[in-house]
Length: 93
Image 1 (cartoon, rainbow, N blue to C red):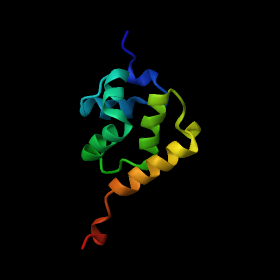
Image 2: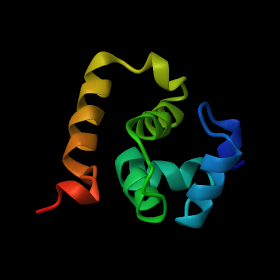
Image 3: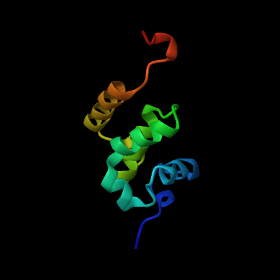
Image 4: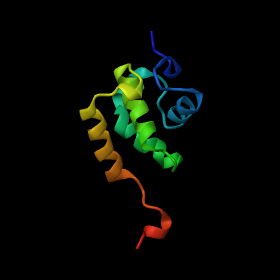
């Protein structure tokens, strides 16, 4: 049986809606895309996608609240987020 997105930790109605909008409809779809690719897709439709949202996706994949991610996972996600966040318009040269 497919696991609904809203049954996963950290995934509320709004994040589930965004995931649906980028073609992710259930846990298996999220596993196939991974947290980083899913976050990049969401960032394309919502420029406010933040580090916490990235952690929420990773936590959902691991079946835990994002606050409980291991430090090495948090550090990996911080590095990914820093490399992929967009600078504010006034900082673009």
